[in-house]
Length: 72
Image 1: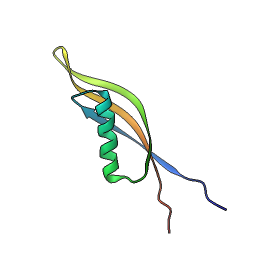
Image 2: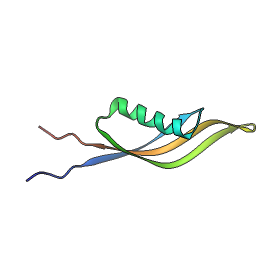
Image 3: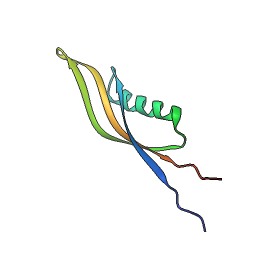
Image 4: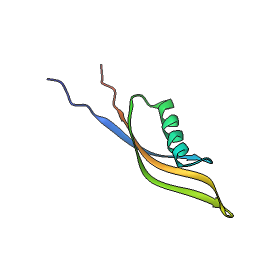
């Protein structure tokens, strides 16, 4: 009988001076450097830092899931 698949979910924050899309991409890119088999990204919250009358930093809080490795 084949076992079901099991995934781990982590929550991280990505940031960018260019926009929310870039902030999400930054989070995924960073996670991919230390985790294998990423599956899903879910945007939880978007916010930004304002300096004067300009948004200077876009932030995206995301949940990222990845498949746990099978023990061999």
